Every structure is written in C-alpha cells, then in structure tokens.
Length: 170
Length: 215
Image 1 (cartoon, each protein chain N blue to C red):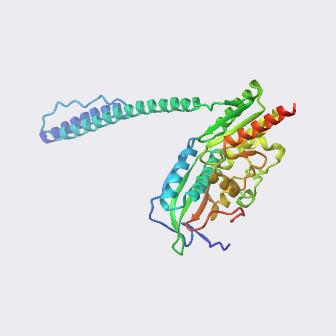
Image 2: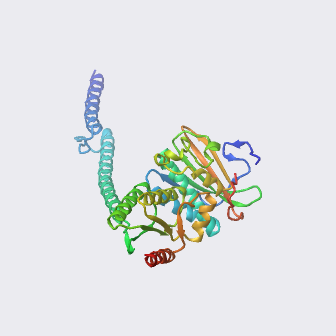
C-alpha cells in the first residue's frame, strides 16, 4: 500500500467532512461505555450499515480499553473524512499520554505492549494481545504518530466497503 | 508663598488618600472582600469616582467568590451522588440461577470490565462448588459489544470453570457478534457454544438421561 508522506494535518488527500467532530475524554472505566455510545451514534449518522457500525464500535472499544490499560488518560476523537474520490468515511483517533510503540510489532496477534505473549504467562497479562490486530482487521487504515510526550492512533474506515474478511486488511 | 503651601498640602492629602487605598487593596488581596473604602469626601471630589470604582470592584469580587463557593458545594454534592450511583451499579450483581440439577446459568448484561469479570468469576466458582454443579452456562444475550477484552474475560471464566471439573457453555451469541468474533480473529474454539440456552439445556438433559439409562 502506497503511503503518501504525512503532512502536518494528517495524510494528504483526505479532507475533513461536514459532520462536526466529537470528542470523548477517557479517564475512567466508564469511558468505554461513553465512547462506544458516541461512536455508535456518529457512525450511524455517517451512514454506515448496522453491522459495520457495530464493527466500528468494537474498534472504539479496543482503543478506549487500551488507553485505560496503558495510557491511563487520553481521549477519543471522531470526525468525518472524505477520500480523494469523494467517498465519505470516519476517522477515529485515540490520543494518550504514553510514548509511541512499535505498531507493526504489536499488530501481530499474540503480542501485547510488552512483547510476545507467553501462553504460560497469559494470566499475568492484561489481555490476549489481539486488540490491535482486531482493530486493523476491522478498519481500512491504521496509523500511529507521536504527539508531544504521547501518541495518537488514527483509524480510518470508508463507506461502501463490505464487511471485513478474516484476512488482515493492513 | 500661599501657593507653595497649597501644593504641599495637596501632596500630603494625596499621599494620605493613597495610603488609605493601599490598605484596603491589601485587605482585598489577602482575601477579605467585605472591606470597603470609606469616603469622607464630597461627591464632586476628584477622588470620589476612584473610591466608588474600587468599591464596585471589591463588590463584584465578593459576588464571584460567593458564586464559586456555591458551585463548589454543588460539585461536591454531585460527586457524592456519582459515588453512590457507582456503588448501586456494582450492587446490580449478576444472579446465578440453577436451571437444572447441577446446571448453573450466569446471564451477563452490559459492559464487562476487569472488576466485574473477577467478581462474576469468583461468584460462579463458589456457586459451582456449593451446588456441586457440573455445568455452567454463561449466557451473553445481553452483551451488545464483544471486543477482545470481553472475549478474554469469557475465555478466562471458561478456563476457571473447567479447572473445577465442570463443563462451561457459552450461549446467546447472536449472528452479528459471531461474525465480529471471526473477523477480529479471536479464537473461541476452546469454548462450547450453543445458539440459545434452550439448546444448551436440551443437550445437557439428553446427556443426563442417557447416563441415567446406562446406570
């Protein structure tokens, strides 16, 4: 996949759409419910199918739990985007205060923030190490960029694509 | 000569007035908003406007402070309410229902976080031991979103149940969640699933009667 050079505003060729952006602050466990609800409403407004809306809600849920698990404080931003060819889509940005990590490494299932998950040690870890892989499989594009002392994870999905297959789309 | 005296008097008078103002300003600076500058000057005096201006400023500072105190009290009350509501939500504990001899059912509703999941698992394991259950059915009809964290909680619960020698069944997975689980790439193959609790019970009861016949 060709990656255009990132500009200050984000990836070139993807402009902002008319729907006003929404932000959900993530500082407490209750944020998972709040972010899911906000995401569900926003995605539905954009016109995504009901099944795709629920997939995006899973993406939001994963991003939010990750902030709570590793970043502790942050926020989720929803905005409408438009591709060069005019197709509308959603941008979900998860920003938090912990330093960036190796996205490629973490996208592999069985890995989490500390590295490869040893099945024998699974109970000590916070999860099954499949969150980012799940996000990648349920979206069109996922990126990570540093943001001050923290980072932003940018997830994009466009209208019109059918439900995701089980192969990694990244 | 008279003019110089007048100028000297004026300077002294000004310095006195400035001293008065400074005292009041210092009081306000240290948080006393009840103080005011007393004026013994005639209304048309040049400094009267200044005095009135200073007093008005102190009054508005006092009003702001009162408003701030009220807001603080309201905020604390709201925070206390939130704490109480949070405790009430925790009280909405998941009931564990014995639906058949030795068969327990745990219906799960809403958002599953680590605390709730740990409490549910502990309650379920205790119930399995107390009721000598050999089968636990976790029903997730009430779960709207299945993300990897939630799937992880169920996998751990199922593992713990199996460690106690009981069968763990997962029921109530709707088609949307089934698809999402596959597309996420989460492996739930270690868990026996049934579409509905009815199916799960039917299967269990059939096995039960078959065992009875064999005895």
